[in-house]
Amino acid sequence: MPASPDSTVSPARRTLYALLLLVVASAAFYALFSSVAYSWNWDGVWRYRQQFGYGWLTTMGLSLVAMIVSVALGFLLMLGRRSHWAPVRMFCGGVVELVRGSPLLVQLLIGHYIIANALRIDQPIFTGIILLGCFEGAYLAEIFRGAVESISASQLEAARAVGFDKVQTYRFVIIPQALRRALPGTTGQLVSLIKDSSLLSVIGIEELVQKVKIMNAATYKPLEGFLPLALAYLVVTLPLSHLARRLEGRFAYET
Image: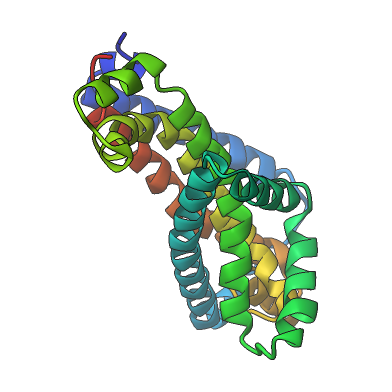
């Protein structure tokens, strides 16, 4: 397998490039915002710093649990779509297409105000985690299925030739190779999950975006609230993307 372009650049040079990019981006943003006729006042943001921190922790906690739910559900749906039993394949395929074919906002409203209300579930956090996990899990199911089906048939035949059953074939042949192939798409979807958690405010969860809206309504300073909001998401999404690239390099091998 040919080496990726990033693997040919030394760590010191990558660090230098990152610093130069940060300087250029900072200068560009400074020039952009300094040209706007706007009186900056960060006092309101500082007064609401505890609420901002609470909202950030709430968002991260919800996203972490929803990630676990989405990965588990995506793996189960992937297995269901590859099942030899037609009703299972049709059911899992229908779930994937139904969830992917409708907006998350609509699913949150229907799931919380209709389905959860009919089931007497009055826990917005629980409902939000399940709905967010199901939404992202449907996308992960297709990512996992594409990675699994990219394994050549000759390797599956070789696994059967040495006496592997279906579980052993998945464990020792399919999953190790599919894991690396699914990493880029999975990382992108998990980053999307963190950003999509901002929609949970529509069902009454006071996560980060909702806290910023409350702060902006009290201080009448929207930009001072939304800039830290963007940075708060970047603090999580950028390390997650970096971790995925490190894992890709760790799982790299000759095919």
